[in-house]
View 1 (cartoon, rainbow, N blue to C red):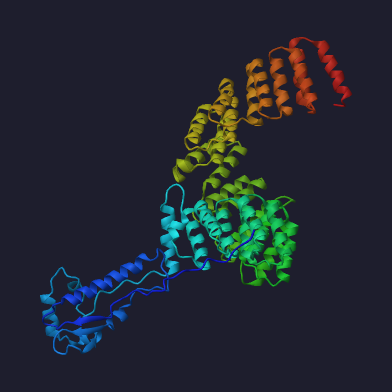
View 2 (view 1 turned 90 degrees about the vertical axis):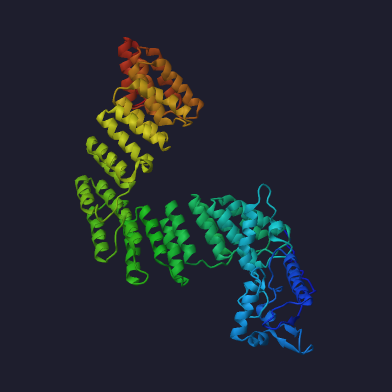
Length: 616
């Protein structure tokens, strides 16, 4: 791709013909002659001509300044016909009494009467400079409907390179990706010599719009155009890829940046650490950390936080604590709330298991250093108690700290899950009601609804489960996992027919059933002895590309056995072997139970001998 030079800016060579003379007026009379009015009209006409010459203001074409107007030569209409004085002299010629008389005799509707009586003509407006007029261009582009004409909004005058960068940045903030790309494409067609700043501005727009494929393509265009990306360009792209979950591509672009000779800065290393966190590449993050120190790059607290998070997510508690101690030894920058939260999370996710004593020690150190904990700290501590199996301590910690640490939806969801794990479903539902009172029903997310449905399943309260599910549907938070939680609550309450109906409700709502919901429906069929619906569901799984597992065949065989159809149960077992799904004790028990209920002991003996040959 070839690029041409920036278009030339054509300016008018004829300066506007502004009159430099006007007839001097004696103060008491304040009468204008015919020539004076004509000259003033001439001045006004030339200004209008100037304004119409271009739709974009240019510093080379300025309005007549106030100083030029004051210094214009004026001619007396009485006395010395050939003598001239400046506007400033005319102004001083007015005495206080004469000036008062002159104001009194001026006509209220005249332009001169609207002035302050300083003897000057109308004060012309100053034009906006180029960068200031960018906002006008942005508004003009966004105001257009349908096909946008960028050239019409910009006008005939060419934009400077810096102004084009400003235009791309401002229009992306106000209009988003589409108008910014239209301006960029217009600049390409017009032959602007686009530089790295222009490309980076567009990459930033695409990053904010989660258009990572287009951002990658734009960097490839930079290579074709022989425009070298800057460190900021690479950093924006890597951050965009991280948000899109493309951490592998982030690492690849970081390596390409290094090979191209561009030195990474603190922001680039921070983005790299975040990519390593998503991919579990804690060793690579540590290697980059050593490279940053060797290159003399000063990392801030945010970079250290990202590195600690990368180590902690991989279960490397000791490594994360070492990085934390190194940051603390520096003195500046110093650990903040996010730093301690990352370290606490590393302790919770430790590969060797959550060491509650070490986590409590970090929390105590946080308070001793005067670092204020927040809601993330509260939730991390509750998770630590849960992992350690100390739920009573978790409740005590919550009650003691709820005044200082505000709880959010995740906090209450964890509390509900803890109550359900401890068999206290009543407390879980009470917590759900408290959550609705505190944050409002419109702010309860899907995870909180699922936790409440699990409590209903434990308490066999299917009516309450339907109410909670209706609330989730009204808030548009009912996902496939919410449907599964409802089905589990209905089955636990022996409402098998209602649970079986949920599959059809999911299709009506546009939610595709998954393996868990199909298995729950087959479980309901087994309780209802409904072999017809069971095989229909099994066929639907194949049509939907859902691969059956051991639980699927177990419920299918149980349904056949409940219906007393031994042959169907044996066919289901044969399908299981064809899918290369290994049977377990539950499958064998289901087959033998089907043979027993059908009175087919010969089939039971054959199955037992086959199981022995399989080594089960």
